Image: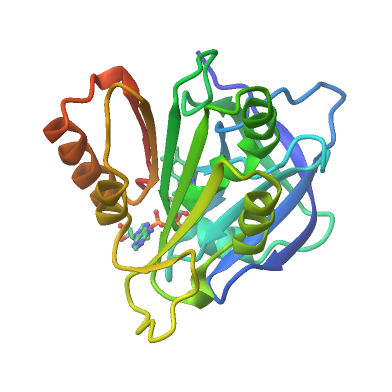
Amino acid sequence: MAIKTFPLRFRWAKMLTSEVKHLAFEKVDQEDFNFIPGQFISIHFEWEDKLLRRSYSVATVPGKSDLIEFSLSFVPEGAASQFLFNLKEEDTINVSGPYGRLILRDEMPQRYLLAATGTGVTPYRSMLPELSQRLTANPDLTVELLLGVRTREDALYEDEFLEFAQQHSNFNFHLHLSREALTEPKPHEKKGYVQSGLKELHLDPKKDIIYLCGNPNMIDEAVVLTKEFEFPIQQVRREKYVS
Ligand SMILES: Cc1cc2nc3c(=O)[nH]c(=O)nc-3n(C[C@H](O)[C@H](O)[C@H](O)COP(=O)(O)OP(=O)(O)OC[C@H]3O[C@@H](n4cnc5c(N)ncnc54)[C@H](O)[C@@H]3O)c2cc1C
């Protein structure tokens, strides 16, 4: 069956880091775009006489924006990277979706562990309003968000997560920096990878539900870890950013 696409008009973009651009689009047809935070869309575009398709997690924070937003990590020579980085105001792109099952379900664990590398953190950004409701409704719930990037400069949406942590005492934001010297780390900063950060949080299959998003190697290593701790498969949800 042919995939149904719809047009989006490019509205604005801003650089979040030297390599990551946040892009915002508006829907131009009259139909609603009902996404569940955590889902992604696919862009369909022509590049060097080929029709290509690439996926991007929706970064929109419901209630804060009516636009369809995502962030793109630039891959040198990458087809979609070049296509999307060079969009001009009023250009339209063709999109399908939303897709994906990396969403919050109707359940109440004691703890959510949300781990990401780079732009893999955008699904969690869009979950913030729902997380806020759950954290407020249930004081026994804790949410640990772990973001892995190379250096401080790569820490996309850091201010938003820190602000959310200030507003919710049972939400913690951990920034894992793999290539920063960290002589004077801030309280939320740690040297190393997200995988070791997960281990330090004393994983417990009786309390935890784990979400993993982004770099496939991070996800594979984290899954091995969850197996060591005997997590049932349905408590470990993942989305690999593969080309
Ligand atoms: C479900 C899903 C959601 C995704 N969400 C996002 C998102 O929110 N933001 C985002 O930036 N990306 C996301 N991705 C990845 C995205 O779809 C593209 O794969 C990515 O943007 C590269 O596409 P490209 O056309 O620019 O590069 P391509 O033309 O596909 O690749 C060019 C070359 O670079 C290599 N390459 C591809 N990706 C990388 C990489 N990350 N690092 C180093 N080399 C690479 C390829 O192997 C190839 O050799 C997601 C992927 C999936 C499956």
